[in-house]
Length: 109
Image 1 (cartoon, one colour):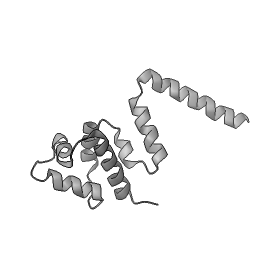
Image 2: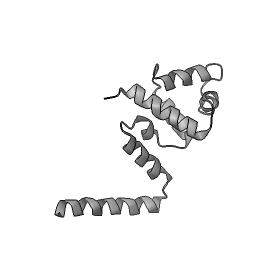
Image 3: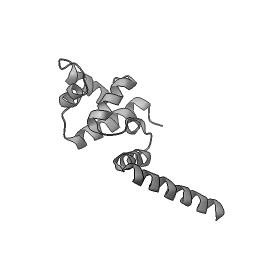
Image 4: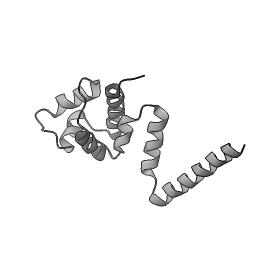
């Protein structure tokens, strides 16, 4: 099982690269001091340091992803979190109803 810091590092890097931002841009936009921004992001992405949850929330907000994505232990769960985040409230409701029906049909089979 991967360590939480390495999972966080992997997801943060993936999200940042997908956004097209540099480490420094992301850090500054998340309110990290510009003089240490690049170094701190490098440490987070390498898994050397693990940010406080408050900082993770700010990074996720800048990246427009749910903070839970950064902590998702497996790739399928992470992908679902991204899909879920992109859905409107009404589509989320529909998706939940569909999943509940799927679960119930498995129980009946």
